[in-house]
Image 1 (cartoon, rainbow, N blue to C red):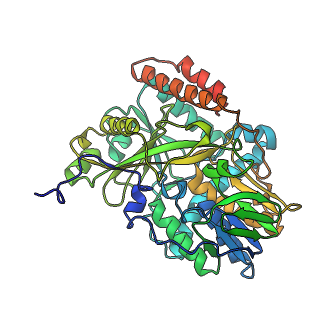
Image 2 (cartoon, rainbow, N blue to C red; image 1 turned 30 degrees about the horizontal axis):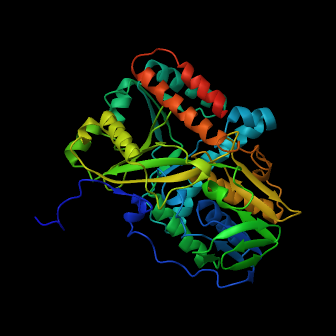
Image 3 (cartoon, one colour; image 1 turned 45 degrees about the vertical axis):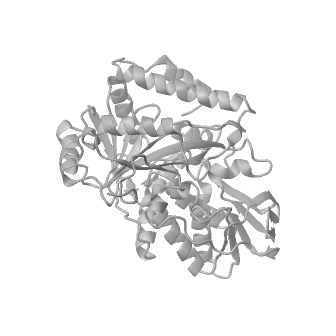
Length: 467
């Protein structure tokens, strides 16, 4: 066997993501902005937020001239790198939203998040987007007494917010669905769909373009002001300009401290043989999470791999972002250790690809959708890792706000919500690093047999103001 046919010992690291590699790698680029131009609506960012907004605006008013500006290519950011969860989880603290805007409004937003999962499934089917979409729900496992307490408390909280479909599983149903040796308890909710996110975002971009929306790639927006988006290739003038940059917002002038770009990393195995799946189970298309403070998420892919993710090194100094998805070797080792601990049958099977992306985190961990008719400026984001579904709700909400339609969507708690800015450096870096070190140590203590939640985790909650 020569070098060309010898399997790689080390995983591919970066190259945007495995999801893009699986569909042929980097796509051909659409033309860049050719110079100054005008539009009715200018959207900055061709991820899910920008594309859903363009889709729903153009469907509602086909006469609108809409241009979408993208620094790299459609789906380059978190939209093409995430865990492939279209989850019904609300992006933010339900208690915090209720305290500010009322219980009924918060329950309405939770309900509409569940409906957004079905909307994503339905649009994909109607528009012919082939993205391995399966609505199999989510399993969350607990591996210690403290985690079981958080798991059961979470189900109780779900019921308080009207999510009565959330339930604890007995041991028999847990083993029937998935066999993880260290799992001592699990909960299930039906409100999640698994997908191949790069396939979906690229398909959505094609659909949007077919509707008559112009997407300009390789075009870096440097500054946004009322009526004008400044780029490295010219100026776009439009009465409505919507920022859809989420985790990359810090790169825009004046936005360095608006949302913190939190890193999240993933690994994926090679396709696993049937003997491994006979041992693991996991045949229902469920996504998988846990109740560790540092949080693991995963899915069984359509071609029989396990893809799992976690925070790794969560933040780069100065709100810097990655280079084409490359993550740290220490993070790859950590995620591989989690994979082998959760699924011992995967030992001896290769981790094929590793990558990372960034997600936007507001200081109060609550997402927002904002539009000011006086300036024509708007934005949506701060999804704290729940963006795959929240972007769809954002697109429909921004549509109604821009068109001036008073609807249930425009009365939701996150509409017009503002968060204070993050601290200046080095306080920002020190705070985030301290927070995740504390969470990691708390996880280790709990897995070692500590019965109650660690003081370290409570300290991290205070530092982060995380709900």
